[in-house]
Each structure stands twice: as C-alpha cells, then as structure tokens.
Length: 384
Image (cartoon, rainbow, N blue to C red; front, top):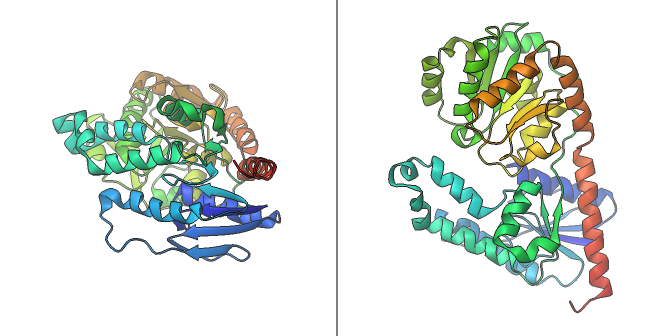
C-alpha cells in the first residue's frame, strides 16, 4: 500500500504531530510506502519527506487555513494509493482531526478567553480566526474525497456528526494509545526530595498546558475539599501557563502549603513517577494523552466526560468520571475513594491493566486496517 500524508509539521511539536510521525514510521516498518507532505519536518529513514513552501504573508488568524490549503492542493494531485490528512486539511481519503470539533473548541474557548468573559460569548462570532477555522473544517468534512473520518473518541465523533450529519456513516473511533514506560524509572524518593514532596505523602498530579481550560480551578477546589479529611495529601501542578492566579486561589482555599507549582521543570516521566494519581477535570479535550500516559505509570485518573479519554476508564476501578468539571464535590468524592489505602493499590494495578489494553501500537494497527480497507475499496472502484 502507498500512503501519502499531509501534515503541517512532521516533527514532535504536540500530540497530533507525534501521532502522525508514529504512524508514518509504523507503516514504513510494516512494509508500506510512505510519503509525507509537510511545511517543516525531520527526515526519517524510509519515509519520503517533501517540504512545501508556506505563503510568504501568513497572518496568525488565517495561518491554519492558508497552510491547510497548501497541503490540500498537494494531496489533490495524488492519483495513487491512499491520502491522509490531519486537522483542517481537506482533499484526503482519510482525515483525523485530533483536536476535535472546531465549533466545540471555540464555544469553550470563548468561555475562558479573558476578553470573552468581559463582553460575552458572542465575541467568538467576531473572531476572524474562528471564521477561517470553521471554513477549513467544513472543507474537510464535506470533501467528496473523504471516505473515512477517524476520531480519537466517541465524544469528538458526536460533535462532528452533530454539525455534519453526512459523516456519520464514515466515522471510525480509534482511541489514543500509550506505550509502556521505559525502564528503569527514575528514583521516586529522589524525585520527591527534589520536588519538595514528603516521601510517603499520597500525591495528586495535575499536568496540562492552559490551566483554565484543563480545569485547574475545579481541581484545586476539589483537592481542598478532600484535604479536609485527608490532611496528608499533596498536590503537584505542572504545565505551561501563568500560575500566580491559581497560587492565590490555593492560599484562599487554605491549601497553599500543600500545593507545589512546578511549571515545566520536570519531564512528564518524572512527574508520573513521583505521583500516585492524576486529577484532570478538563472542560474540553477530544482525548487528552495524559489520560493513557498516567495509566501506563499506574496512576488512576479522575476526569470528566468532556475529556474523550474518559471512554477508556472504568469508573471506580482505574479512575473516576464526573459529568462536569464544576462538580467539585463529585471530584472530591472520587479523590477520597481512590486515595483510600483500601482502594489505591488495586486502582493502580487496574490502571496499568487498562493501559495495556490501550497501547499506541494497538491504535496504529487499527489505523493501518482502515487505510488498507480504503485502499482496497479504491482499487475495486477506481472511478469513485
């Protein structure tokens, strides 16, 4: 099979880019011919990388639209094999919008944008970037070449089929996967000493970029409720964003001395190793990779139904799922249940088992089967 991929960046910038790179290398190793159109990237042995020139004038508000058009035009010229496109790319046989529904993203974005909070959620309708992003998504979803739409959760699939009912018959869900942690792991006691954590304290981890949308506010409030009956708990907050508003909130809640804001000081591997469970009440995530990554390190996950990653969890066993991030009491209930010494060891073991059922290799194998099916269909019906 010959696969041509259209991705903006063939380099490990984020979750979507890492998945595209892993897929290209996986397909290559399985004996398929892989070609990648990209705007920038890192050459990989056995993968043909063709770098395209982006427009010279590219304002930020229409950057994704303009780069998507460059990639889509290149894919439109491909006459053999199967074509693959990422978020806001069209003219491809298979599309995987790893970032989820643009309309849903903008709805949530308006809620947390500082200016949007001041003038109201109608601000999103005045944003040029939103207009271009939604137009790019429509081009992708309504393209006559689209044969399969791969989403990383049923949660995301529901948003897209709501806005584009015609793609319902083309939808295929492939959850994000993870690989087992590389061994040996860092010394847990040494890491905790560096982080200022007591060696024997049950430590709750929050990790994410963009603290408001990822739910750090409700996470702190839930932790404060749980800490009233479990004073030995500690909370480790990591990620890229301004921490000062949340540090002030922690002090107002009376937990300032139990919360450590580490920023981007430590790697995800070190953070998972030093922690006991993950508290991640995201307001919107198509499928947060931290969900399965944490499970791989044996961390039960407390999250929301607005994180597509909740679909791999088993409530009360390897995690806890609440309907909405603002349900502080429900989050605290899950936290207290999982940190209970009678439940935590079993929950950590269940987390590892769930991670073993949701591997990256397994996800890539499912995508390969989809691509093979599309390729077979195109050979049977070459005029379609």
